[in-house]
Length: 639
Image (cartoon, rainbow, N blue to C red; front, top):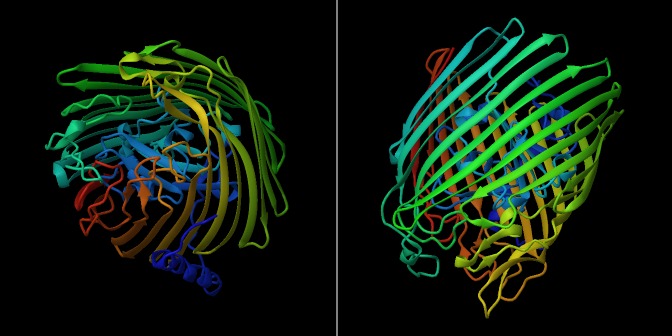
């Protein structure tokens, strides 16, 4: 892997080196006892984070509370191995790149239900409010053998607030104000009593915003021809989430979960899914919905049955002032039956049967607007002394693409109580979207290709980590080869554009993470080195995939002084290319953020976040602005 080193690269690596050195010198310090994080994404069953086989990050309530005013993409983007882009602000089209994979190659879930949309393959992340999120689980690496299509780069599971389930009633509320006349509020309650458990949360936000488009592109040409209107582009949003469950007998629980959010966003220029629409003062009305019911039943001592039904829908109403509007939506219904068999105390087998029904509705013409998927999968999780292993195999049968078989195998070895090494391999795939296959849009000279093959990937990775007391250091190396990549090809005579399987890519990288706790002081750092290689560049294409930096560094420190908590964050993102032709370079940038929180009473607190303290002017997508120096102040109350 060819990754150029610079003084910044060396400095970032050296910033992590003391953590490894201190691992030995501080290992005798007594750790503060804490409850282990329980995660569900890595094996589709609840397990302690310490038992996970794979590369997983959990963004929990503490980090979410430390990010008042942030978008869901900004919060996820602080995790190792993740980069994101927006087209002019938190309310605009948002893309995530997990280990360098395309946004459409990362599967996004809400409470375990697929919300990746079916027309273009993206996710309406801009419509998801972190105020209603309890935690976020990030699983890196090909995970199609667990979750099927789209999980080439990994899986992001956004889990809504469930609240405290061990007392009759608890409640909370937040209200905050910040730069760009941004106002946000949220409130909720939760509890459990006599077998019942419940939670409900709601949020609302509005902002005057800033001009989403720059005056010029990076090559100094004007953005006016793209519909730029030099005005403020704001947004308002609201949403709610809730759960209701009943434990009707020991080992038997039925539960409902619901999420519904709405975003009204101002924008300019070419919009998501409408690249030929270039009006100014565009309005995007976005809705994201997810509803599910789960029955968990301990049939026998070793047999747990989990029945689930999920219903998710996303929609975009794209309104133009003079040329009318376009509306499209995608709907997914899913049924699954997972049987967890605890054959031995440290060995579990999960047998999964699943069905998905996918439907699209659009003002554009589609030759076909539905397909079904039937799935069978087997997951094994085991432990033998110091050896931890997980294996899975899955077959997805698509009505338009036949059988897609994927598998994975991972092995971790505890060398000592503190040191661990591990290796893993897995395959992934992404079935073409409905737009890739069936869209017929003569006015834009576009025609889908029903003969497309799914994109396929093979991922291998290895890690070594040290964890003891307040010290944790991990180094992960990975390589993900993706073939049959789908790219649009234009006929020079007819101008007709049709997607084709013509490209291959290799995503190689190293991720180094570390954290160290000294009493009331916590230090965290990460360094990502990525080589996102276009292995088969077509005419007028370059050899590096666009919008992905080859180096990203994070450094953070947090200090608690009784009721006061202070924090500082530094992020460096390297140069990126604006497009596949590798002709326009987007410069690297450094951001410095400050945080503070103070517990006024046991129930009342105030949190402050100051982003981009030095008012850095930087670009994520060519032609679009990013926030300048901005402050958000939040007042929180907890029962």
